[in-house]
Image 1 (cartoon, rainbow over the protein chains, first blue to last red):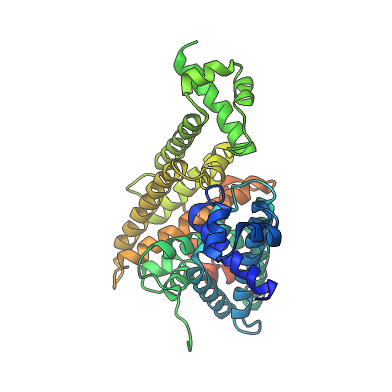
Image 2 (cartoon, each protein chain N blue to C red; image 1 turned 180 degrees about the vertical axis):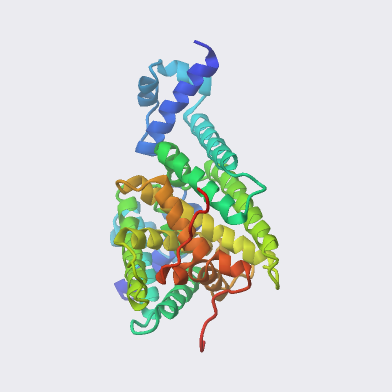
Length: 206
Length: 206
């Protein structure tokens, strides 16, 4: 079996173990057993528990970011881009609950260098959403234009809301990616006031 | 000095140390020195590092929850209650950045029993916001009424957005509690679509 394939199997096992047990409680024995290899081979390929965890954070970050970017088509209207991006995000986090737990729960409070690794992903996602909201504001020709700091704050709010909903969807039976994305479109695009009066956000031609 | 007063001083020192260094890196020596007492006295009063951290989580949770509840007056219109609650929340997290870091970053990924302690606070806040959104929906007499699961999802989104904005406000120079609360009212109440067209949320008689 090629080294690259074996390495991915080890990382699959590691993401599952770190995601379900947490970084501290996860053991290299368990990861090796789940991957069906010997513990020395895990160390040979991935060096240490720290390096393995770092590799998991990077792989899961890249894969989440790639899924969101692949879901969004730049030329479309802003609400459509947001809708597509959110569906891609919630689909990915639902299919990879352990990867999401590694990124959202485990990596954040383990101190450096892990906090720094996951902060890179968060900045990328916030930058992506900031670009999207900025484009929406230009599209609407709003006057006065939204100041940059307002857009930055709105992007933070949207990313925080998406993070919370991904966690909620993953532990609440029967909440689909589409339902989570609909909730967030209703919340962030239509707004609570509209929603209270039955004017939720509606996908067009979808 | 009465024991209760000394204990609060130790916990002040502990919250600052845990919030700034993280749970693992914080040392009992440092906490004792910052509190101006001997390390054995910290152990005598608060038993262990684990118990001290648990006591910090509980104290900071109760104090945050009390601040939000004190800020909200039940009989007022729903958007006014939300506005008041958000201002109280962001004021409290801005004044207690270390307490907020303990709750939001440090406690979450340390495993049990700390994860459970902080989950209690989050459930209380989500329940409070769920009640508020539910009351707003009844106030608006919307037809069809918002299903309970939609309200639960919206509450999760709002709490997640507030968490993200509190972290952002605490590290971005010059973002006031009022600005953070305004951003979140614009985002969640008016919605991005209105905002794009210059129709943000406006406080009435405030």
